[in-house]
Length: 291
Ligand SMILES: Nc1nc2c(ncn2[C@@H]2O[C@H](COP(=O)(O)OP(=O)(O)OP(=O)(O)O)[C@@H](O)[C@H]2O)c(=O)[nH]1
Ligand SMILES: [Mg+2]
Ligand SMILES: [Zn+2]
Image (cartoon, rainbow, N blue to C red; front, side):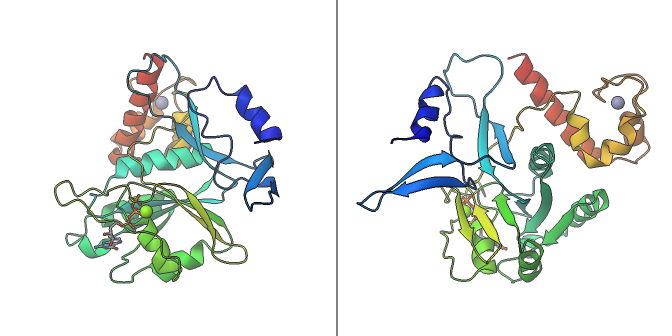
């Protein structure tokens, strides 16, 4: 492959992960060969990108900081897809995806799918929570055709990345929103209630003059990249108004005396669910530093 693309690749070949040279959403200059194949000559500067920590390779000797794995570039909205059941609702993953989006300054939209399976209305508490923080939340059912049109309208005119666990219904929702897409849909495993990782590569599809959607493979784990423990609180929007009141400006809101976040949790001003997600992420960041 000639041109700049190859040059960049060779410069980075010592890296464990080279998946981020070109990512979905990139705008590139390319030329066509006579046989109909194409060559990317240049990747244009990105206005933003979203990434996570690359999973550790089993048996690899790499120690210390985990590398960045870029997921997509030039996006407007991160659409966080979750489900009420099959797989079960997981607000820890939602919070991890929110932090990932906030740290890249992307707008987040939360979708809770499969509401037809939520007979006990377990989701309501979380719908209220995320709305109270200021996020847009959609409750959808592909089976019962609920919330599909509302979501479609809300993401119109933007580049939208659909992200979430396997089996939550990312591809199903996209098919329901844009008839004719015919994305492949999977089954849910009877024994584990988990998805079977049906979508295997990210694809960007133009669904309107100014609207694009990116369907992605389901995630197993999500560790945000490049966040220091003392900065983590800034990516929890509901913590923001308390952060300046902590006694120490390096406060990690874990054990420090005079912590305004801890006080707000005690007084019910910050939800315990969100605080547990915060501690969970803090632990991941600290574990990686000591690895
Ligand atoms: N009951 C119910 N099932 C749904 C709904 N939406 C999707 N499903 C089912 O969930 C299963 C998984 O759907 P997919 O669209 O393949 O899920 P995905 O998130 O794209 O999964 P991966 O591509 O593996 O990441 C399929 O059997 C769908 O029919 C819904 O609203 N209600
Ligand atoms: Mg899929
Ligand atoms: Zn604090």
